[in-house]
Image 1: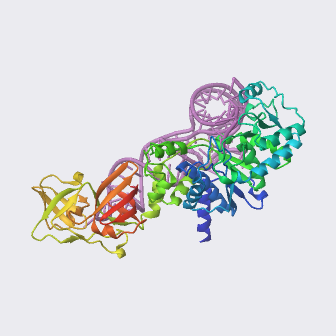
Image 2: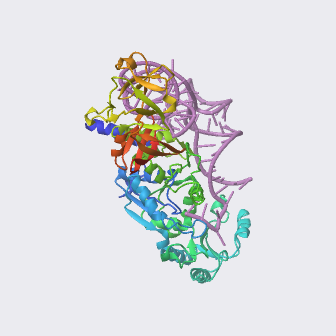
Amino acid sequence: MVDELDAENEADEHTLPDLPNVEEYDTVRLRAAPNPNGPWHLGHARMPSVIGTYTERYDGEFVVRFDDTDPETKRPDLSAYDAILEDIDYLGFEPDEVYRASDRVETYYDHARELIEMGGAYTCDLPAQEFSALKKEGTPSPNRDKDPETVLEEFEAMIDGDYESGEMVLRVKTDIEHKNPALRDWVAFRMIDTPHPREEAADYRCWPMLDFQSGIDDHLTGITHIIRGIDLQDSAKRQQFVYDYFDWEYPEVLHWGHVQLDAYDIKLSTSTIKELIDDGELDGWDDPRAPTLQSVRRRGIRGEAIVESMIGLGMSTSDVDLAMSSIYANNRELVDDESNRYFLVRGGQRVPVVGEDKPAAGHPPLHPNHEDRGDREIPVGDAVLVEADDLPSEGERIWLKGYGCVRYVDEEFVATGDDISAVREEGVEVIHWVPADDTVAVTMRTPDGDVTGHAEPAFGDTAVDEIVQFERIGFVRVDRHADNEAVVYYTHP
RNA sequence: GCUCUGAUGGUGUAGUCCGGCCAAUCAUAUUACCCUCUCACGGUAAUGACCGGGGUUCAAAUCCCCGUCGGAGCACCA
């Protein structure tokens, strides 16, 4: 038993490498630092999946920090804060702490003041392009040697909003000749005229840049390991200058590449999805065609299946393609056993059923591997609906699943009375069907558009949120029921 | 241009630090067969990869060099 558990743990640990130097910290503390500009798309799931998994492995702590320090270019969406927390909950994780950077602006100011007093930063009124030109040749800004008193005065003026956007910034004094131009005297604070959408933060005009804010916060909140994308691979080196001034120890850092997703036409980008929704091309964030967490959630995919796939991507720094089929495979494993079976006929070709001894009803099982769940009852009536593609050629037999064998003659099904050996030994095909006059009208929403059809009467007894399998079609999540009408979301084959 | 960083089958991943047990792991995908009153589940099998070229070595996916290709940063975005 113990061996078994060990083997299992080893298999789990195989996918994600151990975090470096965990033994040096009392508690491993990890953070996800989303920009709250919209609900999450599937790619965003990687961070909480990995962080949550590591948190569980090391019995650590999971911090969420909203990096919402740009009210203009990356303007926060007020509803996104909660939407993101819900997405994390859906994936099965619960943050230990939640912060909003826009609540902590005074803290950033304080640290900036301290940095200025140490001579580690200077106010600079050079236009961005001019500084950029100087920087490229390694020439310092003429503002670089201002005395700290002047800098402090000008920085307070920035805080007071005495400058307009673009007039003045606070730069961290790094190494203007550093061989990597990306690290030379970077901007720590700039002026933004647009008020922050959060009321609590609406009065601030002087905002920290990500590298400053995030660097300060990671230290102050005791983050031990930072995991972030390769787009931020220079951040640690930039922030190291600030850490050196304060004599802080920089956390461990890991980087990973971008995630691409197959199976969707829509780009994995919050702004793209938002535009499509605004233009009415998508119904909302949970439209089945949208590559968002809300969408797959509505389709009945378990957060756990996504986490497993994300963990499977490992921690490589190169870009990775995630196959939706991997998420589907994980999810199928989770839902197959509990999903009862029903028939849905897409479209529907009406065919009368005749025959002197024809049975009155079909009785297929609710689940082929669980006879104890019992059978469904599907009355046949005078006629059935089948899918046009399933219609046999004239004179051929077909087996109506759970009902029996019929022969297609003169556009009618004639019950033949054959037993199951017709299927087992004579190769008669088995198809699904519904009674023509007793059905539940179903709209099935799929990533490729809506499909309409008719489900068997027993389907009306299913509960909202239930995952069922429409035989020979795939799994769906029951979204809502009305009188003999239902909407389902297609999960996967 | 400068600076980082990476390259294993269709996809993802293990192995690379400490060369041999790697004619390369596992998963997924695809195909075939078995099971089956589903094209689900389960079972079996097949398919398919170390970016290229040199070097070191008895031995290289693993070490060194050169190249090729990819990603990222050099923003008053995150």
